[in-house]
Length: 285
Length: 294
Image 1 (spheres, rainbow over the protein chains, first blue to last red):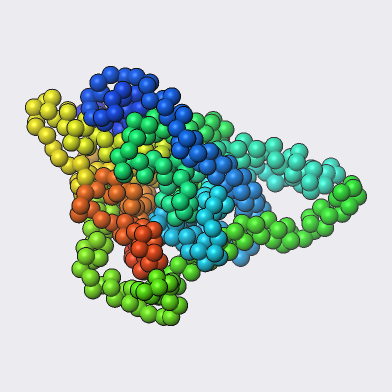
Image 2 (tube, one colour; image 1 turned 45 degrees about the horizontal axis):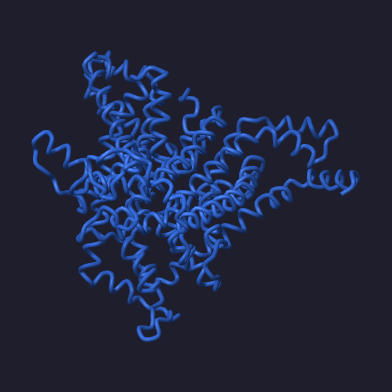
């Protein structure tokens, strides 16, 4: 068998270690830059300090961008949770024409190159003569966030038995009661996990946002603009550290909530998700 | 709502599954059809329109001028070929990086390590894309960590910041997890007995890999390549941040035409290039069984 010999095992292990180094090195470096005391962005750093943290915190532009990102993320997550759950229930419980296509269509906004989704939404906005606002950002974000909730809830629904619903009805519960006391508790953690991932996805997004935000700045757009014109780089570094932490916390929580289905691996960032929500779920302990 | 009415409503719904299905689907279907699919359609319709050069307004009459410009102006051809070439290079690089790693993770690593590796692949996947590109911009810069390191070990310096080399490295880095995950899943599904049988029949490591493992994991590799290829084709952030003067991508042109030149019809026409390429790519991928491996 391949990899049976001791030396090839060692070689594979070394390769894996190098890949790990490759994957994490830039993330560690960029986090260190937030503590760069100098406003010159060169290596080695002259020392470590938190001197830029307070000026970043008091930067009005940053605050505005953060506030916009948070509102857009929360609203888009809300829309995605409702629509994604509805789609997941429809696909799990019913057979209808076009059922196979639902997953494909829902994943399109993240599987297609970002510029295409962005441009499409942009022409939707101009065609309907909407002005760029929080609403247009939310429309864009919700469109590509739906699939994360959908995948999570669908994976959970496939693992639960519909006999529980029938039992609840037999015992006299009406549709609403069954949903409230039987179905909802079953899908609750998957739903929350999907929502957290949707938020993480929305909070980071830049390509689609540039086409739907007009002149407004979300946090990633603010970062992008300042990297390009090279202004306020020390503060950009601090914001970047913050963005990494904010996007990882929801993901870590979501992972804890969906241990059973392992949905994260196919999750949202990975459009891979679409076809089979829990790709090889059993494989990972 | 009082109890009796509620019971009757749910009973009515229970007896009519089509009604329940319809109600559930109405929300997401309306959202996607009215907002997204209609917009996509509109976008590609607009590729056949043009912009009046004086007023800057869109002229709603059918024309193929945009596509003619695309084919006739050499600069656009160069940009398209560059985009496709780098997307292909990135895909090959990611396959070479991911397969040995996935093999280790799926078959050699002990169970506990596997769980750790799994999370370790997910973390970069989920951390901000923009932030990771920015990190490489700092690393590859003239006074960045790469040149500092090369200087330390006495190799002089390497000015690959803001170049196609930088784009190749950064794209390969960014999309690597998208390749690792499907390949990992594919390798995991190959039964041990297949590789044992191959070894028993006398095939050594590389031969087993080529004749037994590779054909079995090919769908996983193709599935991963859909993402590495498609995501590179449609990007404009990485070329903007780490590319140089000769690094314009299709995405950059599209972005400028929409954002600055306000020529949506031409941008839409150029955007059909990656879309058509991906269409063909997906057709081939489906034949190779990649959709089951997603």
